[in-house]
Image 1 (cartoon, rainbow over the protein chains, first blue to last red):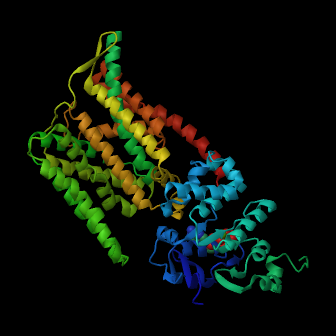
Image 2 (image 1 turned 180 degrees about the horizontal axis):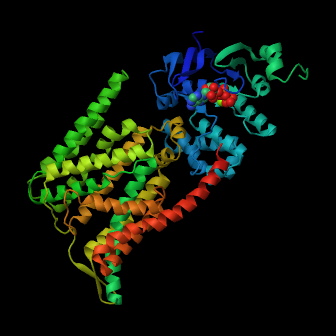
Image 3 (image 1 turned 180 degrees about the vertical axis):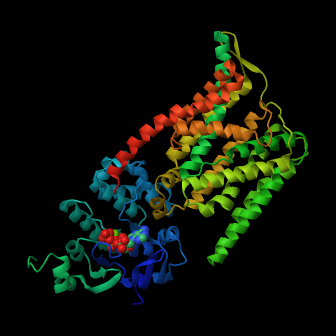
Length: 243
Length: 351
Ligand SMILES: Nc1ncnc2c1ncn2[C@@H]1O[C@H](COP(=O)(O)OP(=O)(O)OP(=O)(O)O)[C@@H](O)[C@H]1O
Ligand SMILES: [Mg+2]
């Protein structure tokens, strides 16, 4: 697939001597939402961390045809990659607005461009606008998730990697956030979505991978994957025919 | 003690406190961004004072040799790192940043030395000459172990202090120097009480610089980037802030503060190659009061240290240092109580 935006091929990632991801291949086209589902400890977070450059890896790793191995995290951010990590990694002692502004740090924007981007994020998340002066550490879980997503959007990413955006959130906020994610795709952003919650991940994505103990067990169109008996049995809560 | 004496002691204490305040800001700046307790800070103070003394004596300051040596080491370290990672394209930039940039103040100092020029020029030259010192030694010795524990970093930092102090003896010799007063005369406060202009200058410098500090950190994106690195390194990297670069900025800022302190204290204190250490140590007490993270608390702590020191020296010159460092015990006790509570809170909101 030569037109791939992100191409991960035969990727191996290790923590010291222990290998956590064993030769995983994932491809992402422009304007595509691709989900990676799998049980705890499968290596989903590890895969994203390696794609972002937080962990060293072996194998093919290309963004728009450019080899990513030579680029550090910051250079990948400058290329348009953006990771919303599982641990959120907000700047707790800074205000909501400062967190958002720093999201655009790599863009080296002029004051008015920064202003515009900030306004568009506030438009998407009015809750953040109300709390712009509040310290990030005092936000509720859902608000923090909005702030992490808002901070990511401030960098105007070309590829957004989301690590469990539904974690610890009420169903209503989860569907709100996924609606935003789908809206981003329509704006031309590609999304790599890692989720425990297979149902919502497959509902929102175009293509899906099932990662088990560091290897791809299944892959396919999300709709097809959602109908796969193995996926239904393991990840969609038995064979109930509720969809 | 009469009011008169108390006023004199207070003015003295505030002047000393102003110095500790500036030094404390430098220490907190470096620690919050890099987790390094920057012991060599005091050495940079001494080098700045001795550089100015050398200019005044019409000699070429030996600091030039020191800075160039450090720049060569840092450049070698940087080129080696790039070569190992095969990033040859970034070498010219490294050459510029670690080779040429530190050489600029050396050239300036060399041109200034031995001429009769206004005092401002030699003062600027002295400060500019010591600014590269902290970033350079940090690049050589601290950046390669940036992810080590605070204790390891502290040990490395202590070792650097001894190394620098040895280099100081080698380059500057064992004699003490005092420089020309920056400003002369005195001001008479209402009530007929005189305050020396030097004292006022030190206090004014502290006020202006801490104001600038505040503006930098609260109002500019780069200041916020420094704070962000201090708060969350991974988060900072994920938005494209390079910790190595922010660290270099923090060290540069600290070096600049140390340079200013050096020229401020040199007219009122005889400075030896190792005189900076004790200033740094007392500023450290202030920084501890600020928990090595809060600038306002550090500033308050610095003034307290200055005042306590001044009054203590009135009662017992021999015991003044004991009393100042003795302040650490109640402060640490109080801090450990407070910190335990804060950490409990943070555990809940983490996630
Ligand atoms: N820092 C680390 N050091 C050593 N092993 C690690 C480290 N981080 C993760 N692992 C191991 O790597 C494997 C994959 O972990 P990873 O966090 O990628 O899983 P995950 O699929 O994201 O799981 P979850 O759904 O629970 O988030 C696990 O076995 C885990 O124990
Ligand atoms: Mg995970």
